[in-house]
Image: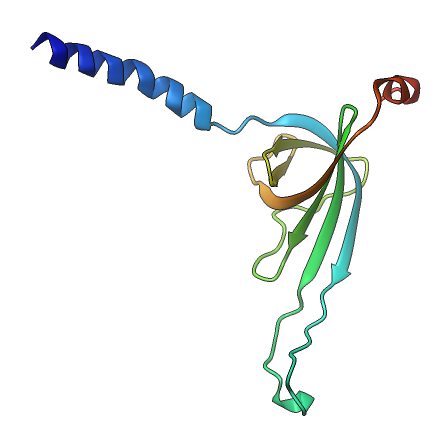
Length: 133
């Protein structure tokens, strides 16, 4: 009986810490640049382009995001959906960075866009301090 009560107390004490660890933590950042590029819709093996299947236009967005002295470069492919918001250079945003993913949302908004992180660049502290970032 004592072990069952102790086991229940242990489970109840661990559960809130697990829920807190899954929460996404967002930090302020700035959009440095956004580039939009239309993807080619080439279907290999077709002799006649009139036989090609109809495809919706697809775009790739490349984001340059700065958080303190760190710059993140991420891409978003719109082959199945659009961005939740329109992001412009020098606009403040909130980001959550994971190993291969950046979640991006505008300040004061609750809609997020998940994109693939492909490069992280750390500016030296001296250069960062000189530029006032």
